[in-house]
Length: 144
Image 1 (cartoon, rainbow, N blue to C red):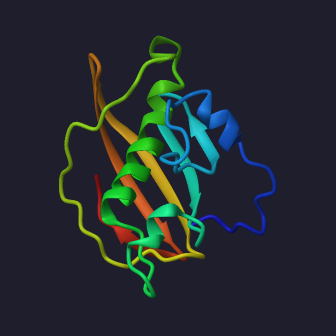
Image 2 (cartoon, rainbow, N blue to C red):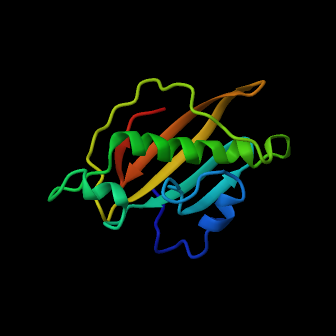
């Protein structure tokens, strides 16, 4: 996991990410990109705050980030190395399937998630990716 004290400036800010992917508030889950190799790899960050709307109902008195939104976070990060390529500019990437996803830890307000996505296979417009999703040096999700 990245040592955040050493990282001063993002490679892409949240606003710059919005120039690449179509997601907007309240369903925009990429706060910054720390590393990107278009068409190959991206390392991005999601800061989980108590202000997230879903915490109102999930769960009162015990806020936990829903698994489906963790998957959405991975999907958004996963679309960045693809949509940052000229051939895919202004396109939309859709999540078509998941393999071997296992949630290992609850994600709660105050957590900083680091999502690393590597493109494993690109055929026509179909992409297979490998995801590493960590929080505080702990692996949270197995793979996408």
